[in-house]
Length: 520
Image (cartoon, rainbow, N blue to C red; front, side):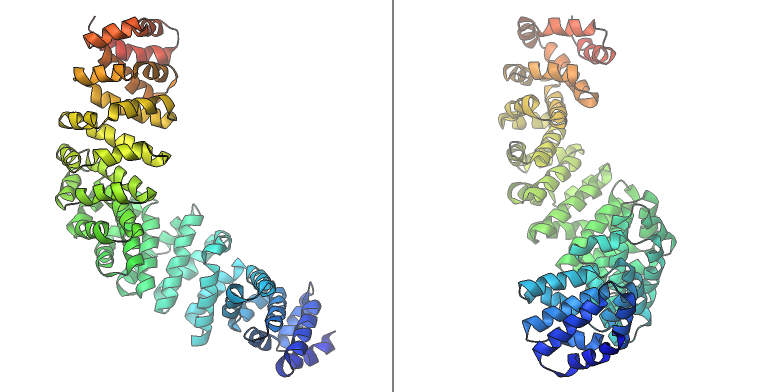
C-alpha cells in the first residue's frame, strides 16, 4: 500500500478533476483507521494538493478532498499540519456555499478538528511565521465560533497559561483571540477563572483595552466583565489595574459591539460594589449609557439599561447621581417600546432607582406606571414579575399611591395573587402591603376586589416573605373598621383565629403578625 501513495499524490497534482477525485478517494480509503498510512500520506506530500482541490470549480473534486482531509484531521498529530496547509478557510467556505454533499463532508472534516489543537495554535500565534500565525488564527476563530462550544468546554486548566502569554507577546489579532479564549474559559469552567487571575491576565487584558485593535478591545472588555462577575475581590483588582477609565473610553469611542461589551463590563464591576459604582459614575459613564439608551440599537439599549441598574443597586448616593443624568425618561421609553429583554431591564432598573424616595416620585411623574401595568398583564412571566416588584417599590411612597391606584393596579395585582406562580404571588402581596399601609380607601378597594381570599391562601400555604407580606396586608385590612366588618361576614376573621390557635407553628407565627395589627 505504501508504494501506491506516491503515484496517487502525483495524480492529485497533475491530472483532471475526475482522476483527482478518484485518487483522493483512494487515499481516503487507505487512511481510514490506519495511523501508519495516514502518516505516510502526509509524508508523501498529499496535504497541499488536497487543499488546492478544495478551491476547484468542480463540486465532486472539492467534496472528495474534504472527505479525505476529514479522515486525516482526526489524527491529532496531523490536524495541526492540515491547519498549517491552509485547509480551514476552504472547508468553512465549502460548508457555506457547497452543494449538499460538499456541506456534509466539510462539516464532518471541521468537526474532526480537536480541542487539543487549541493550545498549539495559541503558541503558533507567538512563534509562527506570518503565514503560520494567519492560519492559526483562522483555525482558532473557527474553533471558537458559536457552533463549537464543546471545543473550549473540553479544555483543561493547562490552556490558561499559554493564552495569558499570548496576551502579552502576540500580534493585535493574536491578543484578541487569546482574550476570547480566556473569556470562554471563564464561562464554561467554574474554576478556570482562578487560574486566569493567578496567571496574571488582568494587567494584559486592561492594556489590551487601551492598545488593542477594535476586536481586541471588545474581547478584553467581555472577558474582564466575566471575571468581575466571579468575585468582589476580582472587581477590586480589575478596577485597581485601571480598567474603569479604559472601559468608559471604549463606551465612548468603540464600535457598536465594543460599546455593548464595555457597558456589560462596567455593570459587572459595579454590581454590589459601592466603590466601583461611584468610580464609574465619576468617570462619566452614566451620560454615555444614557446616550446609548436614547439612540442605540436594541442590544445597546438593553445592555445600557442593565448596566445602569447594576450601578444603582443598593447605593442611595449612586441612585441620586444617576437620576440627575436624565436617565428616567429614556428608561420609561424603553419600558414602553423596547423588546421583551429591554422592558425587563428597564423595569428592574427603575425599581432599583425607586429605592431612593426622590427618584420614586420622579419615576411615577415620568409616566412609568402605565407601561409597568402593561408589562404586568403581558405573557412575559419574567417581565411581569419584574413589573410587580417595581410597582411594589413605587407603592412604598405615599405620594405615588393615588396615581398607582387610579391606573387600576389593585385589580391587576389581586388577579395575579389568584393566578400567578409562587414568586408572582409573593410580589403581588408585597405590592398590596405597600399600598395598604395607612390608607383606608385603598384597603377598602382591595377587599372589594377580592384580595382577602387569595391572601389567606398565601398565608396558609406560602413560605417566607410571601406569607409574611400576606399577614401584613390582612392585618392592615382588618384594622380598617369597614374592611373588618366585611371580613367578619366572609368568615375571614374567624379563620385567622383558627389559624392562630392551630398547631402549625409557621402558620401560627405568621397569623400572629396579622392579628397583632388588629385593634380589638
